[in-house]
Image (cartoon, rainbow, N blue to C red):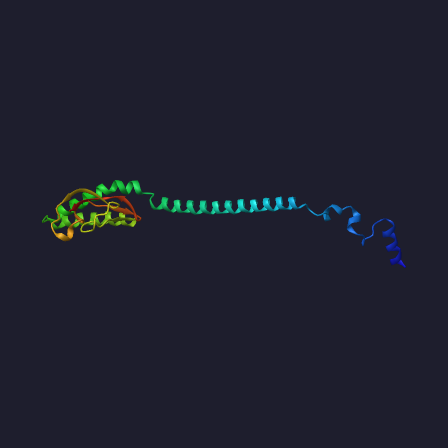
Length: 183
């Protein structure tokens, strides 16, 4: 008997749970959307998706580019100092060759120790000497000072002498080799 009274109570107050939704004022939700509105919404959605994909790709490219630039910056951070030290390295190399002709063993050993220490420190920072003598001339790597007649047939178009060494810093050229080319 209680159940019947509860059912009557809800029906009398207009709160029938099983009533159709359209009766409660939501009939506008079931109205068909016009075809033009649907097409416009789809076009707007596609445009938003395209903008999102382009923005995501652009951000990814930016992230990769800045990471690459950061790595390059760390690799070449001491480039200016190392470039300035190349002249000192050339002078030490010339001094080492002159000392080799000397008869003083202590002088040879001292200069050799200093030269090797300087060379090892610079190599640990990424400096690498360029091999040029006897190699084919490459204008991307070498700076031709002059051309001379090749002493032998196999040295034509190749480097006969090296005036000053070229150097790489972490596989990037920081100084081109100044060379004499055989013609």
